[in-house]
Image 1 (cartoon, rainbow, N blue to C red):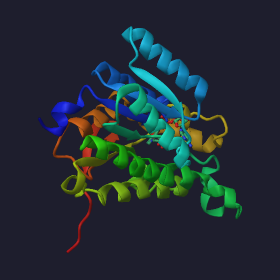
Image 2: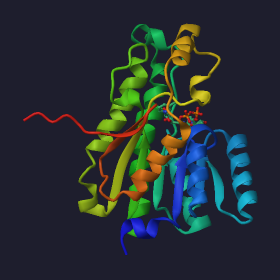
Image 3: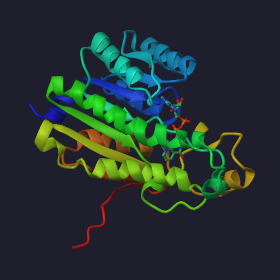
Length: 259
Ligand SMILES: NC(=O)c1ccc[n+]([C@@H]2O[C@H](COP(=O)([O-])OP(=O)(O)OC[C@H]3O[C@@H](n4cnc5c(N)ncnc54)[C@H](O)[C@@H]3O)[C@@H](O)[C@H]2O)c1
């Protein structure tokens, strides 16, 4: 049996799965027969999502872990719950991510050490979850990790330089792990959507000009975003690959190599 043959009925951990893209991925995975742990800091929304999934399935197919991805202890508890409830971890969707609100000003933000939160969540949070996942996947001898980057992780994104920097980091981390299957039978890929209509981009605290810019820009469809994650699971040839999701669909983004 191959990695992809066995993965369909197995166990996925989705960070930032209480709402938005993560919630939609969790729903799609459950529809394919996977069991899902949602790890998030939004307890009320996460528990409501899990109740909805279990009620629809008529059995326990999902569970919630309060998990802040910046904290190893929380990450470990989240994976421990996956083992306790469902017997192990096969898929990690490292999806939790934030915007900084002060976009247009990012390079000129006040010099304040608390500005590093976006790097703690979007970069360190992803790396910590990836590293912890490898230890749990090691026990199964297989695994698939998909990191949520962004079109802002591939293309320059003026006005949101800090967010773009974090997502370029996720792309760099993911691409650098292309050879991982040779070591431990785990594939790591990243999905890079352009704007998708979720709470992330409709936050009332965003500056009006920025919201106007988002409103005027074509969006990716949520169903294409979800399809891209499923493609990363199903296509065994994808390793260290970044899939962008643009208004016209899914594209493989080849890294630029210069010799
Ligand atoms: N919506 C877009 O336009 C868009 C585009 C490209 C990439 N993305 C990326 O997709 C991912 C999901 O975004 P979304 O649009 O669904 O946003 P969202 O705000 O709807 O959902 C993000 C989820 O992450 C959770 N989260 C935030 N910080 C966390 C932490 N420290 N620990 C655990 N969970 C945490 C939130 O509670 C929330 O449930 C993010 O990484 C985002 O950067 C979004």
